[in-house]
Image 1 (cartoon, rainbow, N blue to C red):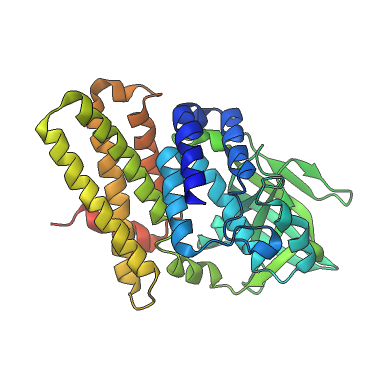
Image 2: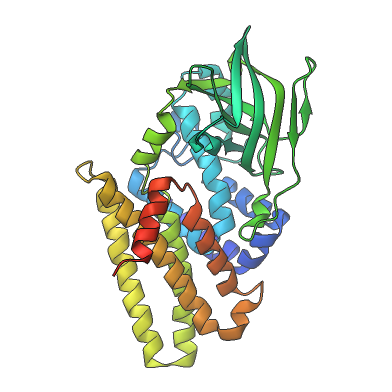
Length: 353
């Protein structure tokens, strides 16, 4: 599977990385290419039409895609995660409706529940009513408008639990008066082509048939603790993208200090990757240890991207230069799936003596 993915990424995605970053149509073609190669349901069991690959292979895939295109990486991982969530649902009819068509990209599903991390008044509330739930509020971030047909929303119930269900990712008015209203795509510094929107829900009826599951109030925080390292593989891929620029420059400028910088950073990347994989495969490591490794990966992505900017000189200030794009991707991978604990660990690494 990995050779197929790398061949596609090298031959078709890498040459178009700049266009993929800014043009949704080019990104649409790129994610369709993953679907054509059955690479969009990697964590879905074969019985449901997925690839059912092991964890190590999936981590390698995530890092690989991030190396060649941050926008494609971020978009496809929303869909991969939605597939994994559907697999864990007990709603067999919903699984039958979606899962067999997700690996090919015939059906694409996004996510809209990061707001559950927020303290205070829930941005999206769910009220139990006859045969389902009534949803009200604002989903601040939903990536994939124009790409995904649907998205999984998380809404807080009166008892503090959260209900997760599938909604259409388009402006929709129900016969009973419920409405989904989407903003225009947000003006983002990085990966703008992924078309992230805000979704406003007004008295939207979520039928019981569209519910994946109900989770305890603490679910997202406990889930974040288990998945501290998962987004770190995007940062590793971003670091590798920066090093690709450094290595290419070393071949043309032939200066010893560039080679030395590349060798040092590349060695550190290998150490960080090894540490991340070791901790992912063992439950003997503490949350504090995992936070340090995640912060290390973030720091490394930024430094490698900055190295690419440094060696590209003034050309890096061109919006379409590879070093410019990778530097902005490092920004994105710094904050993706960020929690307060990850924020603290990232800052702690920045000010370490």
